[in-house]
Image (cartoon, rainbow, N blue to C red; front, side, top):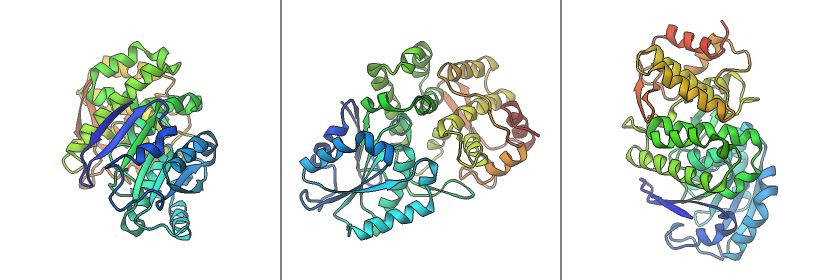
Length: 373
């Protein structure tokens, strides 16, 4: 078990990674300094929010652990998929909290992946102007990325994460043991965010992924635990220095996402997993960096080769019109002064941000990765 302490404007919080953590959730929540003062075991209610499949897999050990530590639990189920991260589900969760008479001495606990964590974090940050929030991440993508750093949000019809807050969980648990039950496609899709960290900040991590792709796909426990901790450390340090994405540094965490979010939007958030969209988005960003003379073509090929070895796409497998993709990109929240900002690699382990890319070039890159005229 390894612990990272992350400093935040909301106070320091803990991210704990290791195997078997779900069964110790109650004990870890009850540790001194984790929950705010005024939250009293024996009287504190915890709203456990999860999708049905996740609850069936991990609900019993989690609920036993919470009960053993004196927490009273209520369960709220979400629908499967990205549709859970919607205005409808946000207000349904508010209503569940109201019916159960939750107040500021209570807590919301997300059990699941990024969709569940983002929705619960937003609800916790806004219900009664703020409840304690705990995030028990059950996907690799959530463990290395979305659960860490404090971003919450829901999708609007116009695009992803257009409504949200900065509100870190008081405690994040990344139980590497649960990855053994993650569906194969979900596991592979999650690896896109892991590759991202190697490209943006850690060349040694990138080389480790290249060397151990087979072991990673076999879900070697020791290796996964090591990789998860390395990614958490990168995310933690970047988030500390630029918590609200006002200084520019945190923008690098969006590598591949400007393209990726457009692919998801064009797909109607169906049939294309977030990690798959980000993988194609990284391939597109790499090709854009080559086109702009920032990155050698050989390095772009190296990135794509690793993504393919990890079972990830580097081209769109569905037909998307380039104009529809460009329109979707215009709703990206990372725009500045009306211009799209792109995170682009200059070498493995270092990226820069550019916002002077002509729409014609963006269209050419979209065509390169499978967009249709």
